[in-house]
Image 1 (cartoon, rainbow, N blue to C red):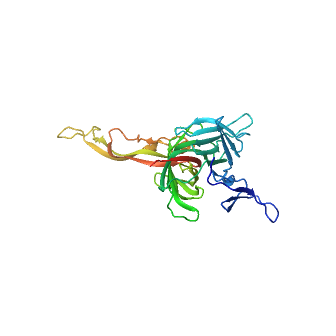
Image 2: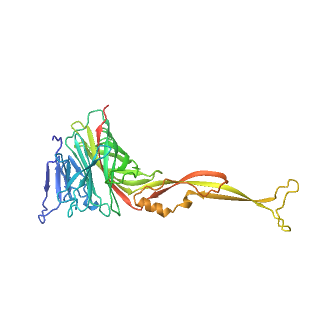
Image 3: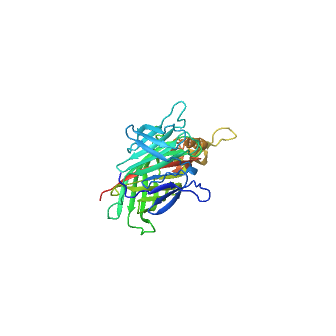
Length: 391
């Protein structure tokens, strides 16, 4: 494994006052950074989403190629050995692994998604049975690094996979999709050690897999907003990530981080973590405005017989004109639809108007829509790796 940049030292510093300091210090090219206790980000070629306050606790992951297993550390109740067996391959080629369970161990089922390329391994893992988002994590690791050639601007395309859990209930969804990232190596101009610009999109997001919720439909694109990178080590941090509703309002927000990899910058990999409304579905419904005309014979109160026109002999009638509206919402209980979407089910997508009387004159016929949203949030922890697109 060749590395252009390497962490020179990761040590536990001692405080002068009492000889105890729980924080680690990491030195890189003469600069020292203080890390929180247990933070695994001590290697410039391996980046973890580590934040125990947000239950992002995973601090080590290893791929056992001989057995096609993942070994993951620091996720409680995923089995004493932290071993995850191969579960399935997603349509985009990324893989899913499941934690081992016995009668007495591994009591909270965990799943991990894994992407492996020439120069990257990327992993996201979450628990299915937590009441809430649960303990989870993400990691992206590269084997080599240099910046790409000299043309300055590059396009990378690749795959995305994620684990998705919920704010106040158990369950997990496995998500997969595609990613496109743009890299401008020269602009923006340098600002300290940061330079250039990275921006991207995760698209074709689908929920799938027996571990998740097959058939629930696609999810909106994730916008990976522009962020500069460190030219010394090809890493970036704290880029914002978001998804939007059909009306343009923000649905989910979060961040993305990652690494440029390969001896010639051939690949780029990272992770994104977004939190927001778990599901949004649009229901279309028909609204028909109509008119009915009712004819009532005129009765001669003297004889009790219908009155007839003396010239034509036709019955004399009075007309009653009634205007009405029939809506597809008339026959549905909105709470039932809300219960369905909260149960992560597809609700009906079209409600026809069924209350139009036979023979009515149709004045207007239109299709309207309304949006149903879950009453809870989802947190999606995704990883992505892209290959450079040749000129």
